Image 1 (cartoon, rainbow, N blue to C red):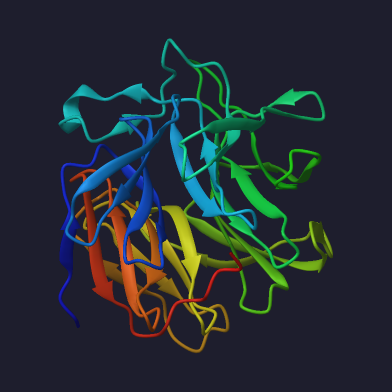
Image 2: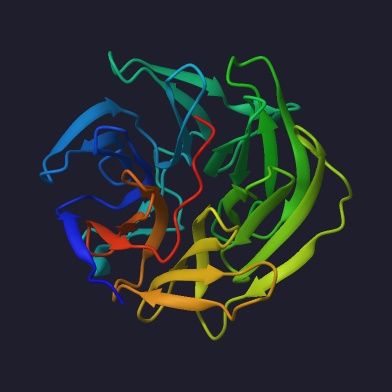
Length: 301
């Protein structure tokens, strides 16, 4: 097994990594409420102030960064400042999809509602080859209730957002198979990875879902990425923490690559051969690198 290295530290709950062509990594700092850029030397620059609770990030066809903003989490004072609980912060005003100009740092609130309903807690995002994007809404926990979550499809120009799958229990990570014909969604609280076949951009062939894998024990799932061979690589929360490598064809048993951080939230792939995995480890506030056994899947944008 290759060595896992720390690329940057001191990050305030990093999430949503995107590997850039120049070797830097875009990510959000949820507690800092920023879109930040980590340079290859580990230095960190704030690209934009986002407010709320920025979560997932993806680059769109226009070159802007699209951010899932969950509206904010309440603080957890027992976790050294690197954890955000599911409780409601006093300043919560709802979730949103934001678009960020990487040159100027200008932030546009693209979507806050769908069909008259407020977005609760948008979480993870992926663009398809048609130029639209899928995103999950985790929902939100209130003192005695929890909002249902769902999966949405939207246009990057702000003209269309559609609720495609609803309800789900804390849907978090979202990704597409290498051929773009299958949608993967990981639920946090159930620790389940599900799949839906797609008929057209933004359309599922059937509401019936397939259970791909359920993480054992008390572990839970977070965000995900897909590699070039179709393996679904899911951030895994719990003792040890890490990335669960799931072969959706069942040719190999799922393997957890441990990081030692119980809040290993996300993964992306970069480098000249897409073999470098970048992992956000949110409890320790670190961005780590690791040589993945297969090349990652090149993103559409």
